[in-house]
Amino acid sequence: MKAIFIAYDQAHHDKIIDVLTRANCRGFTGFGTVSGRGSVKGDPHYGTHAWPSLAGAILTIVEDRAVDGVLKQLRAIDEEKPLLGLRAFTWNIEQTI
Image (cartoon, rainbow, N blue to C red; front, side, top):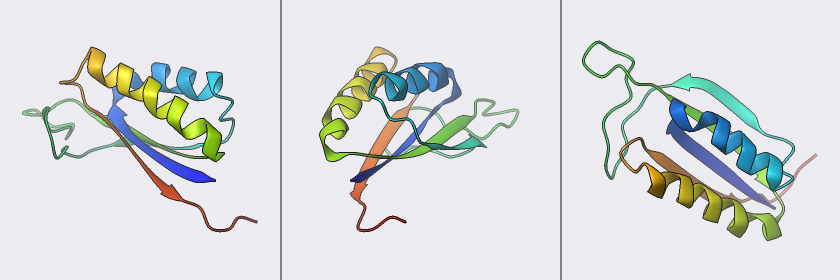
């Protein structure tokens, strides 16, 4: 199993939920509204007067076979509007209860 952490501009939220739903990734944890600044491109998401946009974050644990498909769809969302910001990171899950 793999964990996928997705940080994204709030404008992407519905599309990301749709990606997870279509990939049968039923379980996830949404962190609600978060703030931050990406390391590559785009504007900060601070929720301030100067930087009013905000971000969201989701953590999902998926079967290994689902990872490539989910990442491919997330990449397509990011490439459609790259300045909004969307990043996904994966790591191995060793154990669950």
